Length: 183
Image (cartoon, rainbow, N blue to C red; front, side):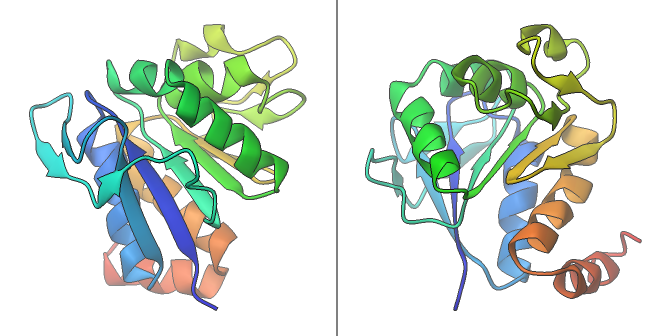
């Protein structure tokens, strides 16, 4: 059965953190749906404009994984969205994979309790936004149960391959890693 992943993009998203997982997951033959938070046309923090597949809908829960980018003000825009918070809570409650990079673990996942009692990482300095119950780690990518967190743009490929491994398997992640001359 084919896997299906939802990637949410908000104005001010960090381009590499958003596009790398989309690219890597599509190389893994995963169906990736890119949803714009408020419109189909979204501009990143470095001025790159992307046309999403659709506008985010509160009923977008029929996915195997949800991916959240960082970037300023992108991650903050995600964290301020009621629909994003509700989708994260619903999908987490169903044990689906929730992946967040850069500031998103601290400004989206932390405040709604998704990281309580878990290990997580984020962009250096953003961990101040974690509740006390979160065990902050400085690893590039941290996986705790169904939650995958990562540090920032420079860890985007490692993060994306970790999502593939968790969603599909290690062999697929290794095949893509080799094909893109990663490791």
